[in-house]
Length: 583
Ligand code: ATP
Ligand code: MG
Image (cartoon, rainbow, N blue to C red; front, side, top):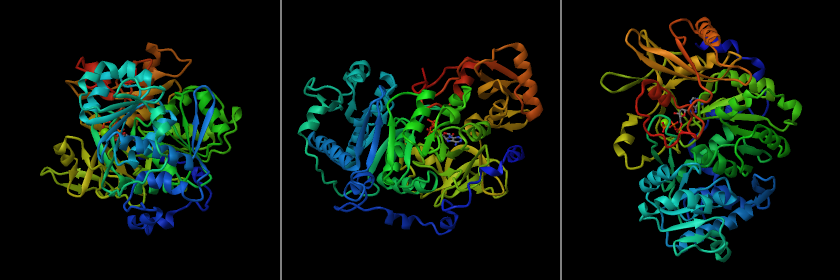
């Protein structure tokens, strides 16, 4: 499996030797030294909001643009660090005046509006816990999460409130207030106008003493493998954000940075809010949903230099037959990073050909709070590999023994459980109301990620699949990613989702669901061709035996292919939790 991609290890992916090469720093990296990157609160302790906004507002970056907001209709709004400090102070004062105390949860349900970003910082300032919801959730998933998360305040818009909250309001007796972003007058004693409150709130707020271990954010996972889990993070996570902002995203003061993830998901908060600001970098937020032409225009017009996106978006761009660098000036772009799902080698190579930059894959989870493994700008990319662990992160491939203990597999190219040595600062501190599940995620000093991977001789990690998705066929273990990536090499294939379908003879049969690129039509002939293509590339044991065309594969709202759903539907079983399923 590995050799195949190494062939494609195009050496010109190596960036010219230059100052970006931090490898010398890796060896002497120590989390203790990261403390010196932070200011610390005047009242003592460590608070994300202070480090991201106030410290810059108090210094030389005060008038620099922190947030460049692109409205769907084409106009823009800019907020400097100084303005962000004041606006977020007002929000913190509002929460405090409403009687909210440390640790109480504030949920957000909003499209990507500036108020959402201001509120996120204000919530952290008042030592409340930020609980982001994805704005496209329906009432039931919202209710489930707000009940589980003990919501005290909800920030939302009038439209979302009427459509999604009104039907469930009676079931949320603990909810004290709803703050509406876009109404001028209060609607009741509990449903309040945010603009009115902001008008009279003071724009100074002294952040109380914050312990690094104080809870900061509660995130719900994507629900790709089952019921979404509530994942608890703390202020100290900012250490990982600083480290990964430096080493994986290569953030420098003059960068213009755009993370396309919605803050309803962990990438959208860790890297769409906190990390760029920790580094004092201008952060672009686009209100609109995906649109290829709009995206290329943003990259061009805003002179984006660092772009953090996801495989699902890249695959959508790949579907369109375009010549982006001929149609747009993308000359400011110097790094593209991607996370969320396996990044097929085809996509890495497409980036190199069409955007004149390879796409750098990185790996992490809601539970890890920040990037753990990444292809660095200064190192050779191995298309199909997730890269190498970042400094301060010890990743290993483990074998779980019969007695439940684990052994690290030191041999190269041997598959096992992808695990992390505990102790990195942004490690999740709990699964909400699920202590047993949390405890089970750890064996000895390792956190077991639930993903399978292997490591090559040079320390690059290669994703095999989620432990739940691994296919056992005729005595072989097959990772769906390998099969999907191979199918995507075929010119007709836009996306592939591969599952193991129970089969009496061979245990599980490899079945591929395929969506086709524009210009290709499903046919029996194409099916045969793809089966033949798979056999030639993968061998008969691993190649799909069945192919089914689907116009769109089922995905989570964060864009991940839901293989468990493909499987349940194939087998006529209940679909399980579908709260995060895309419409
Ligand atoms: P749930 O835990 O609810 O099933 P989820 O695991 O998709 O959902 P997230 O925390 O958003 O929730 O996603 C993390 C997972 O996404 C990883 O465990 C991994 O399976 C997948 N993933 C993320 N980045 C990559 C990557 N670069 N390559 C392969 N897989 C990735
Ligand atoms: Mg998960």
